[in-house]
Length: 223
Image 1 (cartoon, rainbow, N blue to C red):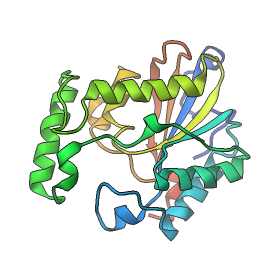
Image 2 (image 1 turned 180 degrees about the vertical axis):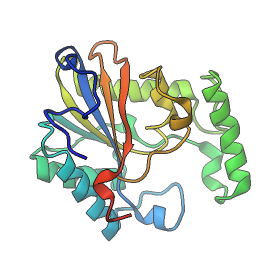
Image 3 (image 1 turned 60 degrees about the vertical axis):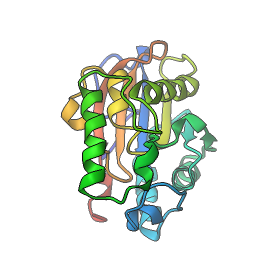
């Protein structure tokens, strides 16, 4: 994957001046991923660090104005590696923490957990923004904090290019609020580890289009 002048190849040509570009990066592989666990705050594995280096390389031509990260260790370590390559200091934003799934955190991964999760995500995709994970958050809440994080990063400035490092749950279904034309079948899926998605948004309304979804071409020989 190669970004030229800070935009993805299939962006909406001629509109860059009126829009801001947001690069959403899911963190690299962490110790939690290798144990297939949720919750906790594991750091990057050796593989995860290599993934973060690849992300940094593919974003090196972006000329980003800001680099913002979730406070979670796996995200912050990913952002630090990107920041070293791009000469940007990561800014921590608590609103970029992972989707809060409540009691599901304590249910082992398997068919029961998947069924309970699917009930909520199906309701979200059907338009029920107030359906929530038991003990967790609703789609409306997740969308609101993602919107706040992006608003702080963009600062209402057209032409701004920002990199946000965070998590698969937050960078999935909640995006339909920002990009209403995005295909629901894509947003149902968590973006892969160390993938890059690109949003082209109005810096004021923070609404626009998903111009690239969960790209992993920079990881091809690591997969």
